[in-house]
Length: 447
Ligand SMILES: Cc1cc2nc3c(=O)[nH]c(=O)nc-3n(C[C@H](O)[C@H](O)[C@H](O)COP(=O)(O)OP(=O)(O)OC[C@H]3O[C@@H](n4cnc5c(N)ncnc54)[C@H](O)[C@@H]3O)c2cc1C
Image 1 (tube, helix red, strand yellow):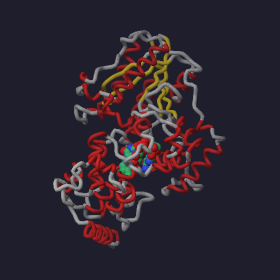
Image 2 (tube, protein in one colour):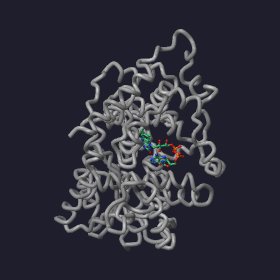
Image 3 (tube, helix red, strand yellow):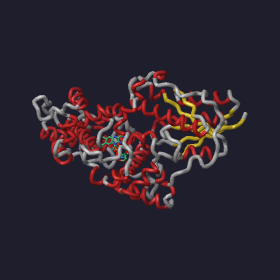
Image 4 (cartoon, protein in one colour):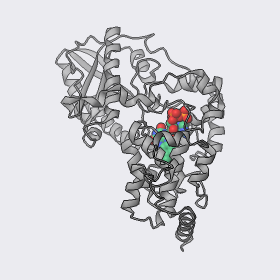
C-alpha cells in the first residue's frame, strides 16, 4: 500500500488559490480530490434546485480541471462520514492508503459539528485530519477585542480587521500557487465518478446555467470603482453579484479583497461585513435560530399566514417590496437595498417573525448563506448585533422615491403597477408603523 492524502472540497469549488489544497500538496503525499453531495442537506431540497445545479456544474468543471492536471476528483452522494469511508475503501481497493485528509474550515454550526465527527473518525483510524483557513481573509478568532472577546459592533470590528491584517504584513491577502508543489495520486477516472443530477433525485433542469444567470456577469474593475455611487440603485447593475461565487468558492476571497483594496474601500467594507457575520455566527451559534438580543424573543409576532403569502408572492401593494420579492422568486437574487426594505416590511409592517422571512430567503436565494442571511434578518428586525433601532421603520414609499425614483426597477418586476390590476396595500403604512413601535416597545420594556 502506498500512502495518499485526500483533499476534500466543500465550499471551495476551485483549484486556483486554494489554501487547503496547496497545503495538502505541500505535505509531500500524492493528493486525490474528493467531493460529497451531502445527503444531510440535499435530502431536504426540492427536486428542482438551482443551487444543486450550480454545484454540480462546477464539480463537473473541477473534475475536468483535475483530469487536465493528471489528477482525479472522486465524488459521492452520501452522508459525509459514509462518503468519506467509501472514498477510503475505493482507494484501498487500488492499493492506496489514506493517511491524511485536508480540507478548508467552515465556521457555521453544521459544518463545525460535521468536522468534529470526521475528526473523531480520523483519530480512531490513525488518519491525520487538517483544517485550513480559506473562506475568509481573517478567521473568527483572529479579530477579537483586546480582552479576547468577540466584537458585536461592526465599525470597531472593521477597524481591528485592518489592524490585524497590517500586523501580518498583509500576508492573509496573498494568493497561493496551488500547483507549485506536490503531486497527484494516480487514481483512475472510474473511481467514484461524478453522479448525474438525475441519479441523485434532482431534475436535470437544475443544472441549466440560465438558472444562475443573475450571477454570470464578469467582474469588471469599473463596477468595483463605481460601486460607492451605484450600489444603492436596484435598476442598475451597480453591485458585483459575487455572493454566489463566494458562497461556493468559485472565486477566491483573496483575489476579490485585493481588488477591493485597489479600487474601492466601500466594496472592501462589504467583504468585511461578510467576515463579521461569519464571526458572529461562529461565536454566537444560538443566533441562527434565536434573537441575538434575547429580549427580542418576547415580541408577540403575528401568525399572519395571509400577509406572509402576499409578501412571498409579491402582492403586498407596496411596489418596491413586491418588485423585490418577484425578482427573488424569478432569479434567486435580490438587490441588497431591496432585501433591507422587504425584510423590514415583513418584521415591522406585518409584524411577522423574522425567522419566517429568513427561511423563505433560505429556500429562494441562490447566494443563501446562513451567517449573512441571519445577520441581515436580525439587523432588519432590530434583534441582531449592531442592528437598526426598533423604532426606525423604513417607509417603503420613501425608499422607492429615493432609490428607484423613476420606478424603473419596479416597472420591470411589477408591470401592472399603476393600473387597477395592481394589489391594494395589505396594511396602511402609518398604522403599521405605529403598531410596530408600540408592540416592540411594550415587549422590550416588560419587566
Ligand atoms: C435580509 C438580508 C438577507 C441577506 N441574505 C444574504 C445571504 O443569504 N447571502 C449573502 O451572501 N448575503 C446576504 N445578504 C447581504 C447582501 O444583500 C448580499 O450579499 C448582496 O446583495 C449580494 O450581492 P452582490 O454580490 O452584488 O454584493 P456586493 O454589494 O457587490 O458586495 C460584495 C460582496 O460582499 C458581501 N456582502 C455585501 N453586503 C453584505 C452584507 N450586508 N452582509 C454580508 N455580506 C455582504 C457579499 O459576499 C457580496 O457578494 C443579505 C442582506 C439582507 C438585508
